[in-house]
Length: 213
Image (cartoon, rainbow, N blue to C red):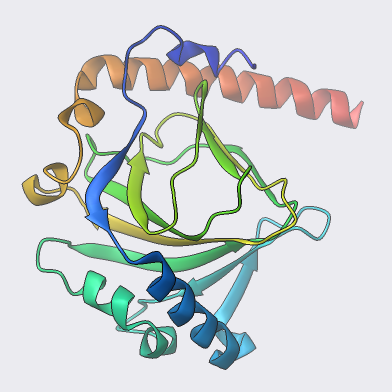
């Protein structure tokens, strides 16, 4: 375990949690399959390439609904919920063997925006590391994490990992979907997250120096 991961050890902070929101996994899979078959290549973007294991992103909202939503009525209904102020929405595909290495985002339940994630295909063994914890939620279950801490997304399996990702404005309605502990102790969260990020930046600097020596 790296030093920046150890910052959360013994902190008693809740780093991730499930929402009181779940979508039918079989329906999601069927709708995704129909969309994946019909959607043209130009509706997909690629990022995070590493030895041919880059991710694919399909935008669901960009200056209005995108064509992918025509095949995703369950997701469209979710995006239209009045209690969710959705800023952006994507379906991400992490290929077999894919890795999104350590990074951080200013997204958490105690911040102004939070990232909601709903697994569509969640192969056993695929995890998100947040601090010292490894996270894996079942298909259809909405969850979030404190992504202000460094986190890494790993899929060492032989199957694609498919995730619905929504960035939403944090409101009382959104907070009410999650355990209150996930946004508790904000000052200590921010301080520990800053410490972890600084340690990660130093770790990355050292790793790059070794790699280029």
